[in-house]
Image 1 (cartoon, rainbow, N blue to C red):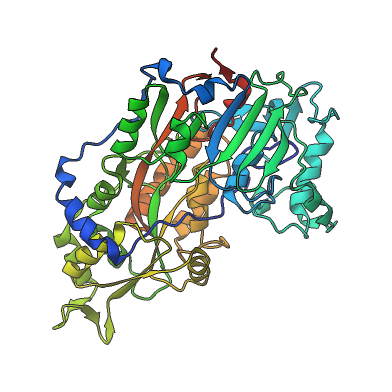
Image 2: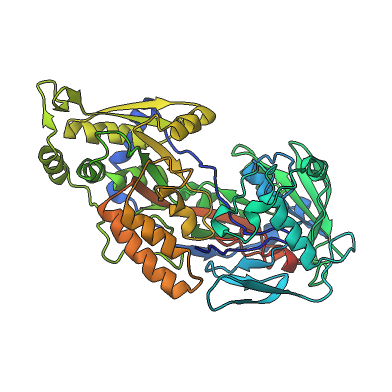
Length: 524
């Protein structure tokens, strides 16, 4: 089996996604849900769109003063700016201006050359040959060669490496035999990275900002904008800083109020797009009462996912029916059961599975009552009040529990749960969303096992032919629809906005703003 994605600078196989962003709520939201649900029938589904600035004369003076600096907002980084060693996702954003990839992804998620000018794959797809562009250099002026790529391959195979990158599925020849085991020296480079990206790190001020300066040795010439800053913003300060001209770019809550406020500023270019991610709820397939796919199907039929989506996103979200974002080349709903909300169907499935309603209104099979726990780490997820009402109507006792993030992850890893709310990170490849459903995958938190799914998952990463992969994923989605391992919830929109003085900024669903950085300019 072969799995090929991108290679980052001296780094390899970009897009190892391991952490989950958890999405949940508590009973405190019940009153809000009751009020909001009345309005869901009037909610209009928002389409992806670009709204150009209407009055650039409103650009704040503070922004106009910056002739050679672009400032983007981000959440708090952790300060480890070395790929494959950070455990804070925002540090991944912070490394992207510093480290250029050999192969990146275009706006459709398809591979494009960056530091590599070309590559060939052998007929048996076992040998990948990359040709570097001429005269590549690191930001300190030293040459970047094939030895640097080889260095990273050995680094990530080193027994001492305990980061989030995993080359096991790449099955690189000789990888398992590498035994150097000495990586402590790299810790000194966490805050002193040397890369070949468009910018080099100038200064990190914890809790405030990360400063970069243009890399004069960048292969495509230094960026036109000399200085770049990632400024730490919070939900409370994002709008204020953007409106005052303290930042030139940020992401905003996906809701009607955000768009209207940004439009009123006049100087904001606004982009509404579908996120390259989705939300879902894990089902613990190892629990005896959840091994039966009829019960899992009933949990989906009997849940008003449209109401959850409307209440949560107010038109800036749609119900998810396949485990991949609509922006992916692999997306399709052909032949997929969309599990429209159907209480009658859900009750029928539970009846046929032997779960009968008792005098207390709770279904039972023998001495076992159908009680479903639900884990979450947040207090603002509309899933809880709606699921509690829906499942009560089915005769299921629904028991939510709010935990801190680390405790929830521990329970997931131990499979000590029934349902748990999750959202994926940005998906670079369709495999990122489904790989952990393989019965042998070490991170199979759902405890899911399906031989047909295992076979399709292996086939899906055993070829680089996108058309062939697309066919395989279509078959995979049909099987996962029939034998659901999770409850798919929704896709959401994201809102980006930038000051119109910045030209060339086009954040996308696969690389964020990093692919735009080399080509930005500031309008006078």
